Length: 110
Image 1 (cartoon, rainbow, N blue to C red):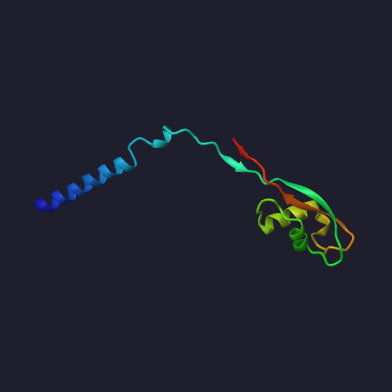
Image 2: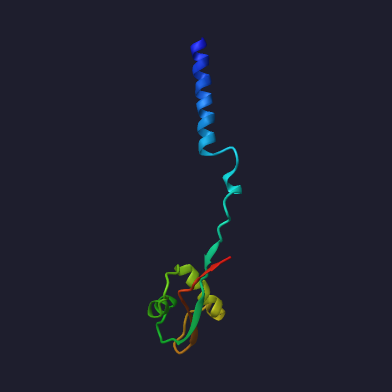
């Protein structure tokens, strides 16, 4: 019985020492400096385009690509924010629309 008790005591003691060495008793966060949060802003420029018959939003995005990769839903939302009248109608030939073209921007760190 003493051997089992001693083995349990050794296991508990080794677990405590391991946790103290890996995690530490004093939080390491208090000694480290807070890293600045860098956010890459997605800024786009608006390019006015006159559509032709048969144009779609996807074909306009193909003809006028962005410099950086932007997901289709994000670019579509920017398109409809610039052209709110097109949300519930199709593109017509000869219509002037604004196509958002995302540019590569610098990191904004704060």
